[in-house]
Amino acid sequence: MARFGFCSLLLASATLGLTRAQVKSGCKIETLRGCGSDYVVYSNTTRLPEGGDEFNSNCKLYLKQIGCSLKFVDECLENLPKVVTTLALKAAEEDYEAACTAGTERNDQYKASIKCMNHGGAKLHECIGGLYNGLQTAVVSAPREDIIHYSCCSYHRMVECAEAALSGCPEPDSPAVEYITSVMERVFGQVLGLVCGPYSRGSTSCLELPQLPPLPADARRTSSLVELAVEIAASLRKKP
Image (cartoon, rainbow, N blue to C red):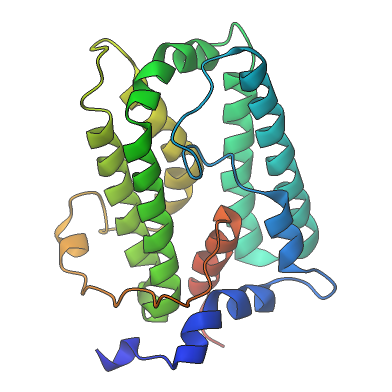
């Protein structure tokens, strides 16, 4: 357990300091945070709009936030962190462009799923919160070589959580489970799937990972998916 020991100052600033070390000179991580990350579904809300002006406004906001984040990634990141975050953001952008366009299969699927998703919205919000907490705990507390393993297992737990959240849907024929898990797979899973190896869903490898100490109350937290992705990707690089 000594490998998990960090002084309180490091625990409070690890995410902030590590990320700054990954961006190019002249770039500020605050610029990325300013882009927003509402596009991670149910990350900061318990309901999504069913349609109309609110839906259209959300679409514009999400695509604007993703475009802003992509610009930061293109201008301020390098090497593996740039590749990983670009893949995730491009996947999210493509998914929202389809879901926000009337007449597309994704748009039809969204409309057929939204009532069921909102029925489980509070639980879905908890699932996404659990993912963020798991990823950030991995970045701060896990040994460098195990950060990706803890991240993979956190993602798998989130998918299981989301499926359970939608299990009580009052519309038995709703495609909500397929829709929400496919969104998560495109944004998170495609990238993690390349590096998770034996740390797959329900695997013994995940079950046998030692429990990490929880983040301290005063630890600096982030709501930026890209910021966390940079941290995780950076852990994959070999030490000099």
